[in-house]
Length: 121
Image (cartoon, rainbow, N blue to C red; front, side, top):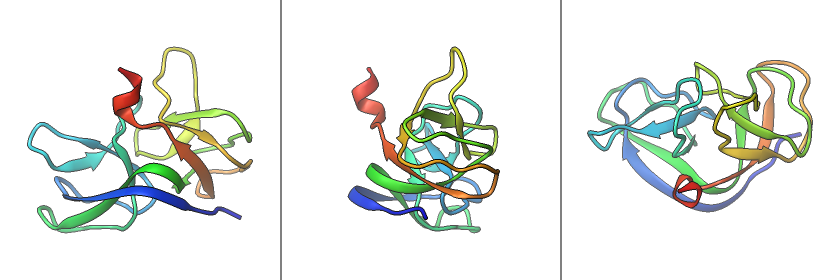
């Protein structure tokens, strides 16, 4: 069962439709959009927002729930798939966190310890 331990959240404007529990990136206009495959993930959307320009809260640091895009093993690093879901990291992709539990199928929620983007520089 997925769990959370929030340490730092911030509110941004949605640049596109944003889905709860999916990875987001910070666009050049300062709004957040879903991450694409191997995106430079800012954090994970804590709520959904269908209206562009409206507020969406993003977990930037801490333990958060993320929708899985496939099987993930506890302790493994995760990156974003093309829809912003967490997937087990593959060669040459950028991790945004570490799985704290195992999930077996896409659509399940997995607890992830986020690795802040600023610390990767």
